[in-house]
Amino acid sequence: MPKLKTKSGAKKRFKMTASGKVKAGVAGKRHRLISHNAKYIRQQRGTGCLSDADAKIVKKYMPYNR
Image (cartoon, rainbow, N blue to C red; front, side):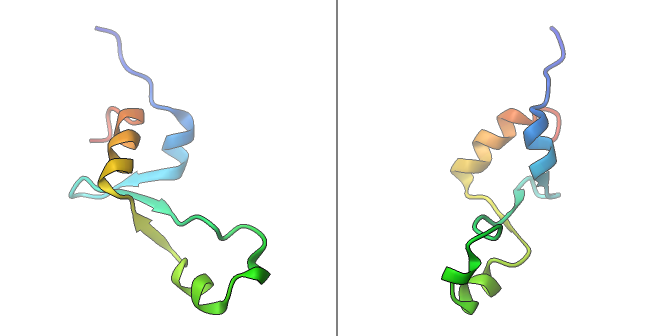
């Protein structure tokens, strides 16, 4: 069986936690921030864990990081 390739976009954007969850940077922090209030910007700080449905897709892209 040949080795599976990791999607190079996924390996740059996602990290796996020790418990198997997928960490990712939050969306909506790149531009047009003046239209968002301070509470939104503050809550979008840092990284977050993906939902189970999204994590299932990302784990397919990263076959050897499970």
